[in-house]
Length: 343
Image (tube, rainbow, N blue to C red; front, side):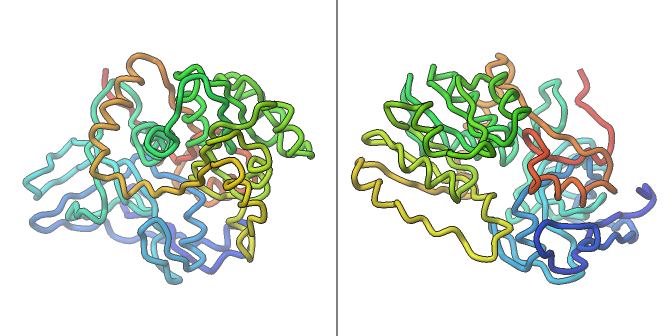
């Protein structure tokens, strides 16, 4: 990475299947000069998220415009303000927001970019992309605001080794729930058990419907869905009365040409249950209070961040590909520059 230039990853072509290096174009341009009302941001961390392939495919998602060939790839990041001509921001402050896949950015800090200052907690800046970022907030609002959880319930979480899933596991254990995590492979199943899952189910082992029924003989009270597809369908075969399904993501469908068709949705009616989706950016007005609560839990060591860190800006294409082959644990992010909070 050339520190004297603004290094960027752009869309080289539309991906087919999982992303590969040829789908990305690396460019170096001049570091921008800022005008009145702007700041110059120096990237510290960049997020890696499944939705980024959708952007590269020309789809509009998560409130972002679709990308054309040659555009800088969308993505949130953590950055240091190294120059400011903006009255609300000072040099040295750390923010998180829409950076794009680049190492510098001139910004007016508009509402659309959704920048927020990161509180100094004596913890790594990467928290701005994990527990204090959209991942942690998605887990928080999905579980508490839309899941309407009760103490001691049976909770099933798919994608339990991922960023959102691993956080929801910890939330559910805070309420003394019986937590069943679904993940791919023995290593990930051992990992989610170490986080607190009472049982783990390897979806790669087959017969997922019966495995879920064995793990939850009285049915599922709350299913937190991060994957969609066949696992969503399997969980819907074992719903308890008045159960809730929170639909957070559908990574199992992102590489499919056609979306998954759910055939057993009438089970919702039979069990008086609900399936509810949510969009994190509809909760922007509540983020301050959610962040305060998350900070308290972090300081009290009730929750911990689970991060899969890719080292170096040049490794971002491979880091994104890992999201679809299932080789990562927790929140995936790239450490562009080595830095931590001061004590």
